[in-house]
Amino acid sequence: MGAVFLFGGIIVLKKEVDDHMPNHIFINRESGNDNISIFYDEPSFVVIANKDDLVSIQLIDESKKPGIYILLGDDKRYIGQASNAIFNRLQQHYINKPWWNKLIFFGREDGHLSKAQLDLLERKIIEKMKRAEIELDNNTQGNQSYIDKLSQFSALSLLSKVERVLIDIANIDLFASDDTKFDRLDPILNNDTISILFGGQHYTGSSYRDVFTKLVSTLVLSSDISKLTDLINSTEPNTVQILGTLERVSGKGTKLTKAIDSSKYHVYVNFSKDALYKKIQILAHLTNNKVTFERW
Image (cartoon, rainbow, N blue to C red; front, side):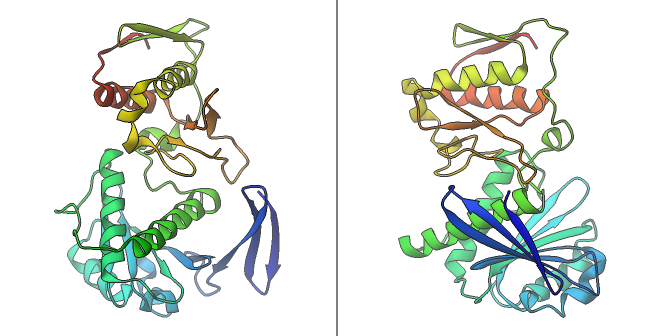
């Protein structure tokens, strides 16, 4: 994971990115309120807090900047954007959305996020959450607006940094369904072989993840990979985009992916039995194949 240093209440986490370039992530836990944590990974900042911390949130500089915020409740979430001060929007939702109890918001330290970039970020997060079958309180899919390629690249790079900080440092996966939160083990059926019939071909293995990995590997090495573009990330895979070109390791050092032989891809496998079942159904839908769960 890297080295951790402490400077006057601010944690500096030095990580190795791609085994070459060092990356420093600063973690500032507000001394006056242990429930507010601020993460800095230049140029991004991420704030995690409880709803009850709203009075304290207005005192931090990050709440006065534009950005994206995510309200989290027991059974649903809401994604919004603020072109000016994030706190103003949070203050409104404190009253008109009583169901949430925790929040995450992020932006750039220099405050440079255009309306087009905010629209893109909000829309991307909504899309990912819908694909993960997470219940949302949003009434729309997000705004569509023109954005030039450079601004788009900058915004998506920011989102990638934020997701990495949340998963690797804060141990929060925004796009994890309930199935993936609590069951990190790979259950085995009393040494019985697990089997599915997918597109007329049998896939068997000693564990659910084994069968899932074999299936994904076959699809990746076939012409069907052209049908999986929505599931491919250009860097590390995640719970929604299950394929990527880099290995993913959790902040605790656990490997979350498996390499697919004879390809450049890694597949995200850290799912529960029920979550794997849903992922296989998605693969069947995307590739127009019938799937039968013979022994599952």
